[in-house]
Image (cartoon, rainbow, N blue to C red; front, side, top):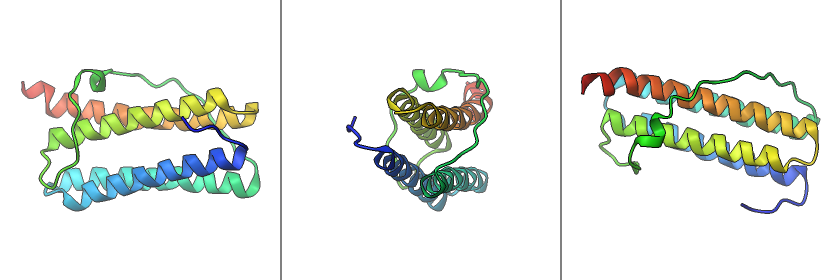
Length: 151
């Protein structure tokens, strides 16, 4: 991972990561032929927009509020094959891709928390990591209900 020189570089890196997630979920929503899946991806793009906005506000104001809660990890993403985004993804493939993305985002924020230069920034990244864990859990529940139960 890149070495950061200051807090602004860390926040810029995190904002770029959120923008990539926004772009991915927006693209998946746009390409989806299933309305329910489209709605799910639009919802996740909006949540990633909120994360990015939170980071922008923190960079601008230098302050944030955070909460902490433990999020269950069903670990379904640990046992699925990698999926690349395609024009005609099946629903289960899109869920696998989303789980993988959220897992990667969780790891990113956890790593940034470990590298944070102060406790406030560490708490911010831990809070963002938990948000990503919630997203992953929602995709895992969806996968469990609509894919695993059918098999």
